Image (cartoon, rainbow, N blue to C red; front, side, top):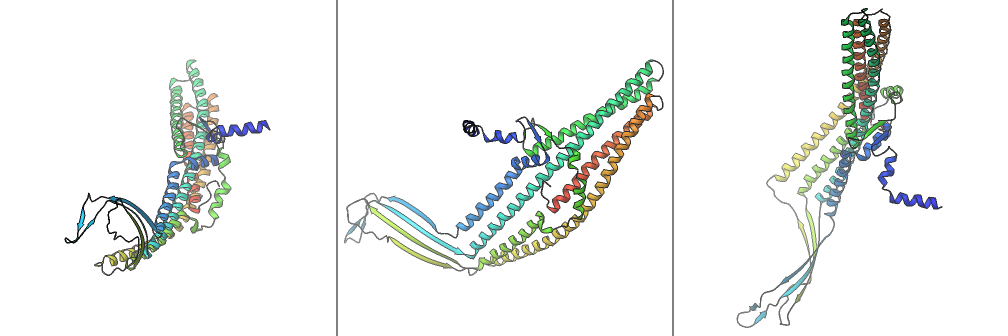
Length: 437
């Protein structure tokens, strides 16, 4: 029991962030699966935080519109002093004007159709802000996914390059020893040395590119650039070919797409703005109640002509505005028609995009498979020629050519893998698949 109480007390004393950090690693190192990287970014990304604040801002604006239809109460407190002045009533008498204080309370209420429409517009704006927030969340999650894949592909390629560099360095050492004993010419060793330098340059370029990918990932996750990120999943774990190809046969429900949902919301918004312009012709009903209490700071006789209670009702009807209201209404109608046309264009564009993205994914998969096989063949050729060179059955030119072909194949593989993953993510985004799927 004492241990349980001690643990509970420790959880209260230790900042909550320290416990949350344990799920991802230490303060200086983050060990992340793809899902964890996405969750971390969705929790800390500043762009998404701003999108959430936009939703709250739209909600506040909506309540402001609703509050305009509710009673408004104001209070006043004032003091007046006429500095001994008395009112002269034509020589017959005079009325004292002593100093006084007043307390007033005014309650008012104004209602019009425009206020109701403004509240509806606020609701639509809040809905649109929430859709935009979800779209931002989707984009961030998918961007993290792309960067995660890119880092894995780059690391895998870097490992292959380093392994090949070890092999070609051995070949250079072997070639140089052959030159030293007079079996080979120096030009043969120099050719292989150039290939060593070329591969070292490729490794350095790959390392810099990999660091840029990690920096982009840190930016999306909003972590310090000194934080070390360790990816705990492998490329083989995440390149689920069956799941990717399953997207090609998945039906496209356009109503799940965020761009289409925003277009629909824009239609509703334009419709309400048209109604709002129409209500400029409508009447406004307002009512008020006023209470006033006055206290004189003197015993002199005086007159108090201020009534303590007063109510009033006003009906305001617009009559003539020189065409201003008509012009505003006509503009709102045209804007509504524009949004209808935009919705049709959006729907057609999304359906065409669906077909194109399916084609892109299919082509990218075929290219990825081809480049993957090309790397395997180029690696096999390079290993075979390297062995032949050691036995004098291949020239240094054969070695440099096969090494160059291998580097080219690996570059093609990296590009094909990136395009394959990107095509998959773009189709997932269009279909509005859950970010963790």
